[in-house]
Length: 293
Image (cartoon, rainbow, N blue to C red; front, side, top):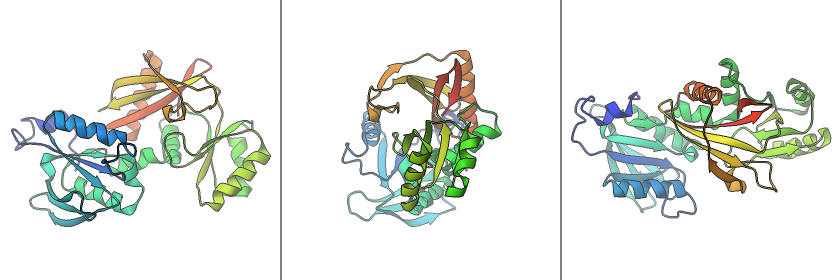
């Protein structure tokens, strides 16, 4: 069960919620004690401390479920590396922040489901996380809802490489992507058919799943954060001189950005399609038209 509105969840509109303290559970694959590994978790911890809100890091690589009480909607987890000990969460008093790394293994997925079943407020649900984590799933979703995006094709073997190239316009350069990955990792600009074949052969050896997209040259992209299908912030990310990718981890410069009406409408359409409570939507402007990445 996902409670639809966070404001309702933390106020008297949620029976039994009023005046009870909230616990924040952060599901992550990283250890927050090292800010170099996950600075976002570090920032969330600091914000919780400032607000005097209990914050518990649930590291999916070292945490197990030790007890569940469906009648009381409680969930007990134990961090078996000994750092954080055992914690019991009451679902209706818990807000779960799910980091991307939590969906990378079955342990993380099980923890997401367990918290969700305990009626915790999920930011985001398992379904939403899985949708946003997979570039092919996202591309199919965009196609279903008529959301403008670069032409995309899934390639699974050498026999369908040429078919995939034709599906996205038959031109080089093109973009090769792994189905999962963040911070620009797994995104490659390919200049020729020979280069594509050699690269996908090597990546298939590593059991990577791949898609190709038409290349739309731009000098920047825009990341917009949406919360409950409302735009809260947009950032223009200008490519560095040495990398076509616009991720700040790759050296891109970030600046505030104001969306026009067309961009705003398209971004909210993508946000609604994802069914995520909080989501980052990336888009580019190509030939004066916005496209969701």
